[in-house]
Image 1 (cartoon, rainbow, N blue to C red):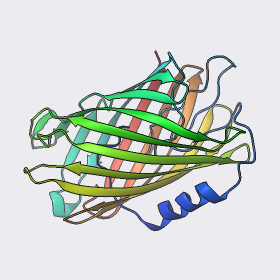
Image 2: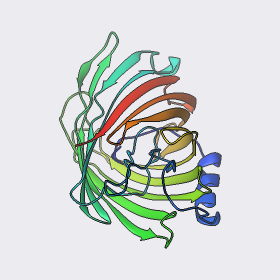
Image 3: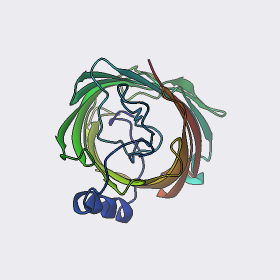
Length: 275
C-alpha cells in the first residue's frame, strides 16, 4: 500500500526487525517457494518474474515490478474502533493499488480512493495517492534489497479526506535468511494537514514471513505510528498468502490494536493479480 496511508504504532519488534535486516547475511537465492516479507509470494516459472504484492500487512517489500509488468492489489477490511473512539465498525474497500514497472529498479504506484462506511455514521471516499518506488540497492545474490518510495495524496475533500495534498516518504529494506525465512522493515515519514496546520507522523514497522509450501506463506507484522501531536497507535497483525496460480495471489489477515487510538480489531482479505 502507498506510504501516505496512515497506520498504527509499535516500537520494539520493528526496531529489532530493522536491525536484523541489516545484520543477517543473505543465505539463499530467491527461487521457487521463497516468500519475501512485506508481500509474501512464490515465484512463477522463469521469464514472468515473481508476484510480490505490498499487501497484506503494513510493511512493504523492496522489490519492484518488472519493466512493462503491472500488478493490481485489492482488498476489503472491517475495523472496530476502540471504545474511547466510539467503538464503531468501519468497512473499507476496495484498497486498490496499481503498480507498473518502469525500469528494473523503478515502478510507478497509483492508489485509488478507498470507500469507507462507518456503521451508524458517515460514508464516503478517502484520498487517493500517486508515487514511485526506487530500488537503490540489491545484493549480488539478490536476497537483500533496499528502496525508497515518495508519494503524494490526492484529496477528495470528503469527510474522510485531509483536504490537502500530503507528502510521504518510505524507506524500506528486506532480506532472506535461508530458503524459507525473510524479514522486512519500513521507516515512514508523512505530513498531513487535516485542519490547515501540518502535522508530521513517523512510523516504523517490521515483518517476518515463512514459506510453508511453494504456494502458501504466513507472516507476522508489527507497527508503531508516532504522531507529532496526539496519542500514538500500536498494532500487530498476522496472516496468510496463497498463490492461486502464477498470476493471482489471495491473502487474509487479522490486525490487533495494542494501545493508543489503534483499532481494536481489523479483519481483512485481498486479491492481487497480474494485469
